[in-house]
Image: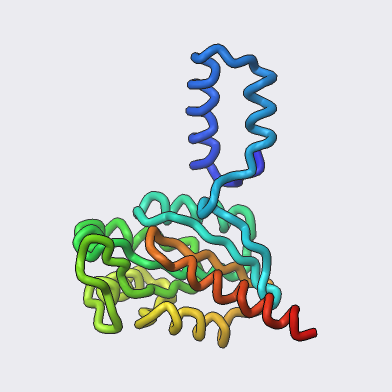
Length: 193
């Protein structure tokens, strides 16, 4: 399989069982797995920016966050892993605060963006739930910062990320805008040459 991670292996095993039950041949199943390169926002590798490997993932639940970061650690070894995470809904984040606080252990640097509200009032620079999440993660000994906007996330990464680092943006909201900003910068720099 082209996708790394035990969670992707588990998904593939489920798909294999369903395809086998539906009557697909072993060869057809093998061919489908070999050709499948993944879907958008699931450990999606977006290239690099100034020597930083860029990955985007939809992970917005503690188990998905932990699985994605565990996969990144296994794949990238001792490289410094940045995780820019956008909580999804304040009520949901508050209800899962304990689980979230321990799900970032495989990240070296964690940036918490304001909460993507979905059906709630939008988060902003004073977002108490996202700030509480940052405090809870810090209490577990991780290097974490609350960034009051996605622009602040971009600025922090622009200032501090180094060649060889890995950047993973995670969340169900619009955190992938951070990656789009770096893509725009790459395109702008390329076209000015």
